[in-house]
Image 1 (tube, protein in one colour):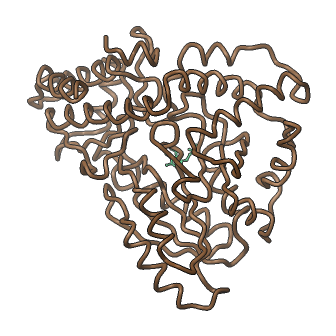
Image 2: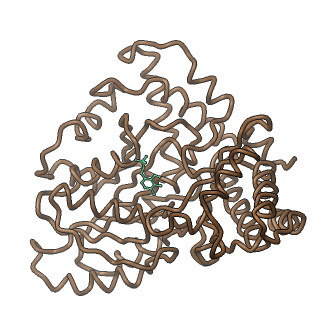
Length: 402
Ligand SMILES: Cc1ncc(COP(=O)(O)O)c(C=O)c1O
């Protein structure tokens, strides 16, 4: 059993092993926190929990002294809506970087809410380069101010492909385009908590994420962090908004009062999860994810299932492994789940049936991933493919030892 399991207290051996990229396994101490008795969300006890959670989120998101964190009851997609309605006004232009399914969804959300959407698209499995963003903004700076692109909306970690964006690089490239004030808004639903996000240092204006991925909490919390420029934009925006309006949250923060009923039990869970991750140390958490990713990628190659994304853009939290032509992906996943108790995710959109997606974020360690790799190898053999379980495990362990 690897040391990571001691650190993460991942899924129990007798349970089926959830290796889907959200929801992810919930460690015991987080589950226990969910069972705490209910309390008055307007009382001092909840106020302390609320404060600790908002404080605890600042480090993994790199919010900085002038930023703020808002937590809504909701899923990640709610964070898209919250970002769009608070940061922009009807008819404004935004540039969306589309690297897969979730980039497409972010673009669709912005369009549905009345923004003019332009995109930079790359093949699924690749990442948009910072230079491409700079080039687009350089051309845009020629336009009159009132017509310029107001925001660049990006997917930090594209869960559908396992490709990560160089978010720091995009922020730096945008800063080099003098006189262009577009806001940088990042969907880090499957990144935050598993890979560094340094909003203030990098110059990212807003980051949205959710509870059910690297934060190891059940689904139900939508988290939106705002830097100073985003806070100013929220007070200027002319977009109709009510439930997703951040202003009442920002006004209530000093008194630790939420405008509406918060998801109290999920706050208990997130408080426990953040305490556990902080004990491990955020830099160690990020390093662990990178190491685990390398092992899964090596094992995939050894099994004849190469990662879709290249090493240069590999996600630390999720890997999409390509399936050989002719292999029935649905059957592979069903056999894995039913006979081995290991649950992985299908591809999304055009990748459905063509890849499997294996999560290595949150409360999974080497022991769980080794179980998953062994189960995958046995299942491939059962389906008639020449997979070598021992070689796959050796490849993963070699990567984890580095
Ligand atoms: C990168 C990314 N963005 C957005 C979402 C949408 O989140 P939700 O399904 O919680 O609404 C997901 C969910 O998997 C995601 O991975």
